[in-house]
Image (cartoon, rainbow, N blue to C red; front, side):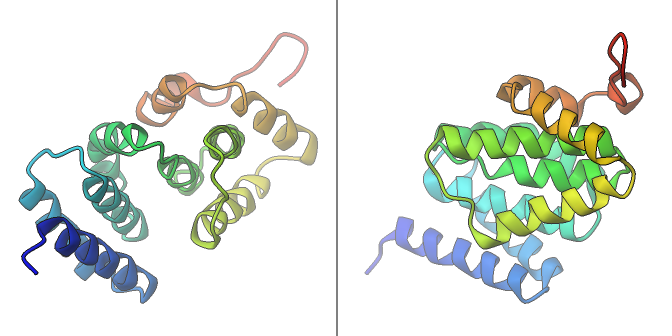
Length: 179
């Protein structure tokens, strides 16, 4: 039907399907092709392509590439009211052993989904559960709960700084009279 937007939407769905099948290298290659074709577009299809791209990088353990792509991806996703990067951020932090920051990001993610009135779908909930499992392995219940509460107060810019800033500077945050 010569509808390029529909073709792009179908292509982003293929990226999601490949990811769900664990074929992350293929999903990554396909998402790169879509992003190149959309050439800096802020379209809804670009948002979903960025989401698939980051998810593939995360699944492949390519954390530095994820961190490099995250600012552009976050901008496009947020333009469309999609908080999808927040649960990916939580997984990234947890996988990097930044348990305090992962717990904070879990709190931020929950708040971000709630703020935009979006239910947390199974894949995103799975990301949050994975991040929580990893973070709780290093934190006791009281500290985990405190960090999640702190994260609920973060805005998007603070969340970006938490993920993209220097871990040495950010982890862990201690307060007078407690950790």
